[in-house]
Length: 93
Image (cartoon, rainbow, N blue to C red; front, side, top):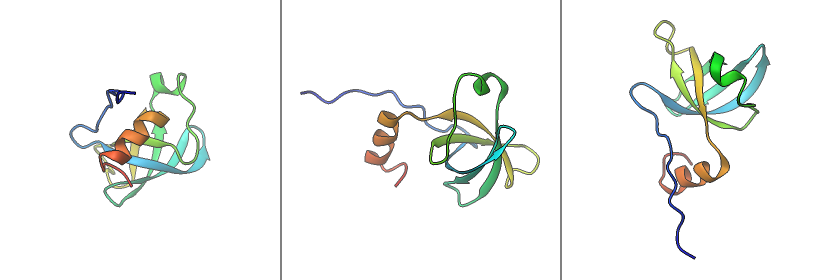
């Protein structure tokens, strides 16, 4: 079997990869980000109706312009095959 080619969205600009640590309710989550910060993140409007986010999911977080170290928006959720690709290419552990 040949290796499957996967197109994976990577963080751009100030976006960071994070793992959902806790569900806080009201479409808000505590996310531990790869830059060492813990942020309270919400799901952006168009994304809210399309995806279910659970504890342990790997996501892309876009920090807010104000309170960038404490708050952010979840803008992408990775699927299982994408997470495996990220681990293989050392983007996450």
